[in-house]
Image 1 (cartoon, rainbow, N blue to C red):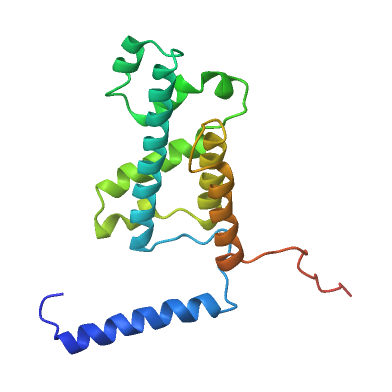
Image 2 (image 1 turned 90 degrees about the vertical axis):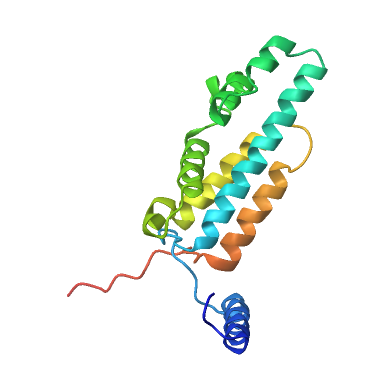
Length: 180
């Protein structure tokens, strides 16, 4: 931050750390429909897609090494986008509806917007808390068909922790005032 003294920057860092600690202890929760408009979501989206792509590429490599995928098919997938790789590698799971891809597709579109991020385009990278939870569940579903880490359980744990820590839980219907 050009033009700010080190003392001011130190106070800003301390205020940021303090606000994070206070937020963790707060009873205030987000609604599931709350849009996450933090620049941190940009990094999360990019990291999650990079992780997913790495895991899918590793899976394809293992298929080739085990003889379940011909080398020429493997080579032709080298420059293919992530979603077509998923559809190719998991066509049976997708066609039998054991693997849904709608939220994976949404995640990839968020990533595409994130890599071309501008401050004015934050709304194009602002999933709701509920959308983020659905994305994590679908990524976990994908990982359930792949050996190794991360596992579906690990991704589910992250989603559960986010839900527990940050999202309000509505277990009862709101009371309705009696009509007279």
